[in-house]
Amino acid sequence: MKGERKLLCPARRVVFAAGNGGHPLGSSPSGCDNQGDQLTTEEGAMSTASVTTPALLTAEEFAQWPNYLGIGIEVNEIYLAGPNKWRAYAALHRHVCQELKRDHPDLPIFTSFTLHGMLNETGRKREEMLTTFQEIMPYNDLVAVSFYPFIRGGTTDIDGCLRRLTEHFDISKKPYAFVEVGEPAERLRLPSSGQIIDGTPQKQAAFYATLLAFAQEHNTRFVISFLHRDYDALWEKIKRSSPEAFMVWRDCGLLDQDGKARPAYTVWKRYFEVRLAR
Image 1: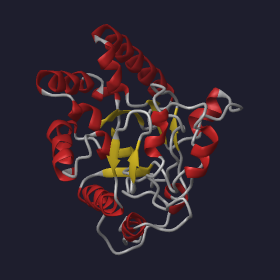
Image 2: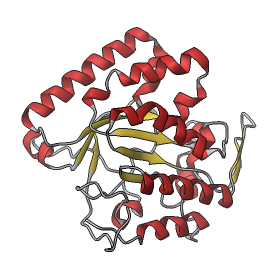
Image 3: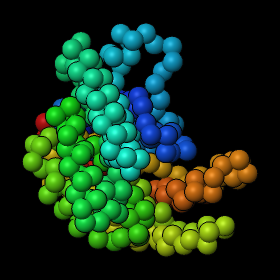
Image 4: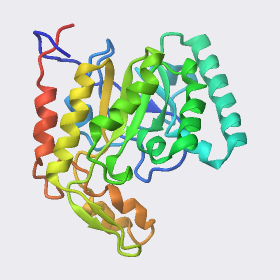
């Protein structure tokens, strides 16, 4: 991400074709440079529309549509359901990847894992989960990561988490991609459980500063911020029919509910404005 020329690229699409059903609001929008430049385009970073598989495309049209194709979302969590379910998923992943590559060898394909989920495990269980995910890395073109530090016990040791990432995945010699990231900027108390999420604007900005510095220093294809703006208004509409847990992402926006930019937005824009060489 060093260089002389500002990155100017058209919006690109990252398509997520399948997931573990864990996210209420769908997959996030993104933009990226097809040659491996390491920031999102502003259209992708700042949009709030979901990226979804278009229902009216033929299979051939669909295959031509994305610049990257995600065929699984946060799939390491399947391992928690037991080794048999993981083996079944891994076989499915290999099959789908091989079939897609047969007709579209140049299409980058990935499935993502939760960095926080892996690090929340301890000892032998953590090592087993990391090892099992390595089994499908030959069938991934990217090391694709979801990362929410507040789900990692509210950690502020972002450098430490990212160091664990490189310790286990640099060996693959594949580019990184942060397909879904976020950190709340407000303190939240879940009404029923009483659980506290101690978000602040300063913690949010520090997270993005550390993450984007990592992306600059490593071969990183794109970074997707899950939310552009807080969804207080949406939550008021869906809270009676939605699990309370869906509330935890409400205050992860780079803008608050009134559209006011937070310090994290300034961090994001600073990296977006970096001049890049091709």
